[in-house]
Length: 457
Ligand code: UDP
Image 1 (cartoon, rainbow, N blue to C red):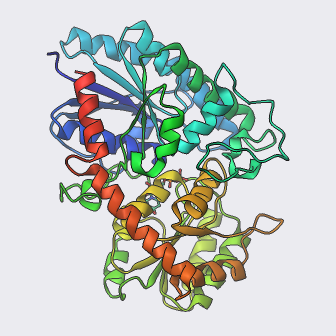
Image 2: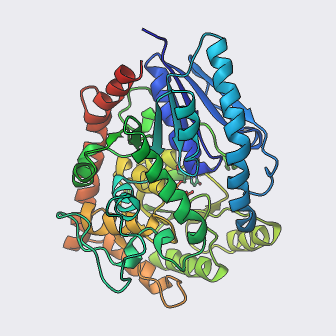
């Protein structure tokens, strides 16, 4: 049997880095060779890199490397990655073959559909690592498949029945990029369409999804004609099934974290702290931050709030907020979120519902106040509130601001003694148990990982 060699190419943003690194660690932990590849700048920005037998890194330069953090430069950055990355990837793959370590499966994440063409040209099997939930994949497939895709034929005023077992989805519950007037939709729609098309063109290719089968059974049934495999939750093992207590972080943070918050959490009673974070990308308006701060203080509960600063002006605003905090709360620029969510003091999570954050909260059994901003976050919030029952969705006003009273109301539901709050907390515990079962020896994800190792050997 050939030595298994997985090459995983990922886009250098936090929510793509984390599941890619974890998949790499899980595969390397099973004895495979894994090479993680991204841009030079992306690799340099990652504060630390996991070291593990079988795991190595490679990178390539991209001429627009400085552009990707501005929304205007983002699409040209992605386009230049395609032209430069294709050639560099091809050369890297050839070099591995020449060195006697040919790549046996080429894995790529979202925004990089061109990788499948490189794999086809070199006759290497490929897999799309889908880092959103399987339901989001079902939606993209429903929109863009070449047989009966509904893209361009949908009436925005009509709700759709996606799957028999799911509630009706209105347009605003769908990933925002599918709405014609949403920012970036002109750029994202062709990318998503291409992802679906390249998978259709090569029926041998796989889709690896960062979820677990039990969580989204109906979505898996809906796309059962594709080679779709659940490999999640892709979360450091110490916080998941506990099978490797040394695996305590993803290991590729782009931001520097403060060091004081774990000690602070240690002093708080069980399930008392409200954790607030809106991920690594969303830009939150000053007005929204003020509403959150008021709600937190009025709740009378301790809170830990991650406020990232993307420029010096924002840094000043955050400094002022931090110094002016009344009540028992701390504001930090970044933290190890998986560590925080698994801390016994955390009682609930006010989140933007990025898929990694949503999944990490499910694994930790922490209920959610959902404040989705864009992309698949709206779909995740819908699933959390109406399907998995692990949280409540906060309603935004006409200016898209969630006001303090609304946040406070949601917090009261999650932390209070009413039936609704109790049910949500019970569901959170239930899904935590099922997520851990999936990863443990003999569980669905554990078996799927074995299957991948068998078929790509
Ligand atoms: N994260 C973290 N520390 C923070 C905030 C976020 O480690 O202070 C991690 C979080 O654990 C998750 C990722 O950053 O894995 C954010 O991904 P997500 O899909 O939730 O949101 P996005 O950043 O894409 O909006």
